[in-house]
Image 1 (cartoon, rainbow, N blue to C red):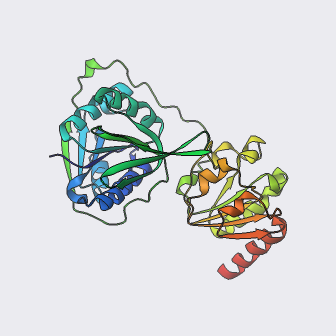
Image 2: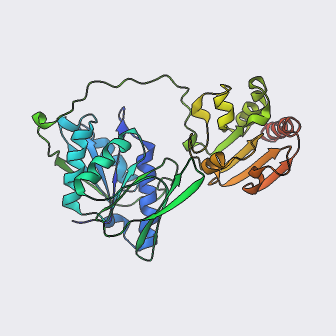
Image 3: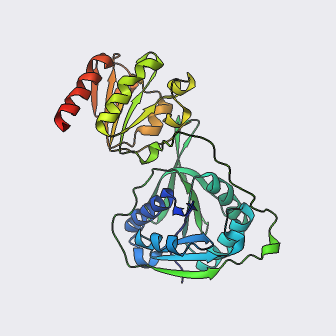
Length: 330
């Protein structure tokens, strides 16, 4: 049975990746805009072997139906294997819109599927809207200095890769189902094979999931002075972010960088200290729920996007704020 929206779910180490739940959240939002029914018009495609519990998890988190394509050839990710299965399922289900995470696997497989279907692909989308029966794909360009609004005509399906943090996961439960199929790829028919996964060492920071972020910029002055940022973040139960100037200087690892060349975040609360507000940084945090900025320069661009701006010495205000929070919570 045809559907309106199909998302490609990803999983790793026996767990569904958070981007998959975010894609379902975006699908629900778009279905609401178009007047579609979530239980019949939103489907998730899951590939793997022995992943029955993961398929059930997707149903619990907003998929009207999960198509679980199982087989040894897709037990692990390969661009060739995934491309063949995803393309075959899309041809069978005829969705109007296909959403894929803007992740390493998504970067790889989405263009292959789009080429096989002979349709265009909008990549790295920070938002998607359905207006007047047409889809508009919003994406950044030139390191966030420009924003594209792309409208694709006469394509079926419409396809897009979506950045992390663009949508909140679904909070409501719908009655869905799992439909298992055999992955339509013969074991000897692949041109690529899975060998192994090697993971780099990182601090495990994922700012895209943080609800509170305290970010420091060049105005902090020196790496040893970042403790004022860390202490406030700890008091608030949040994460530490940074501008590119801080990570380029080696004060913090790159995984803390927010902006067009770092990560895009959507926390409920974003505190920017000593950050001037270059357009590349603003592009990665302007979707935050509430923004508080601290800067000595009253003309700093960051104040243009802040809900509250404090003109003054961050080393005066941040310790006082940290102390007040600890006293209130204590």
